[in-house]
Image (cartoon, rainbow, N blue to C red; front, side, top):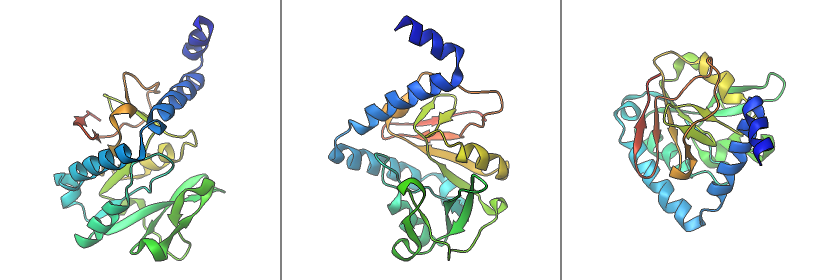
Length: 203
């Protein structure tokens, strides 16, 4: 055990892998009813945020595996007259394409690794249009650092957004950890909304 901890300290990739596995186990241990209830608390806090309400173009992620369900936020975004965007994986460039969606049934289908994403017919949106982005992740710390599933897609996307675009994460409390291994260049989120609190960070 001591040797494993020493290896994790020496190799940031191993530290991230170990943390990712631990947090995923905790998240997946949540009962479906609890996940639904806690997810609604997260959505309730997100939809009344002033930065969400004032945003004209929002980028929303679609839930994967044991994540909280984000689809109701799409309906609320459309009802508020916002341009609503979702990410689509481009496997060749290893980047996320931004596509406008207006109907989940017509515009969304299973894509890369089984993650729901916009279909090819959805119009492209420039990164410079995004006012507000819902940033997914596996684990977050109080400084706003995050780790995802290891593909690096959001690490490459976030620097392409405008500096004033608000980066907000939604996560269960079990996903909040003491420290996420991070490099100096890693971008942080502006806020993390859980079922119990909102954590404000300094970017």
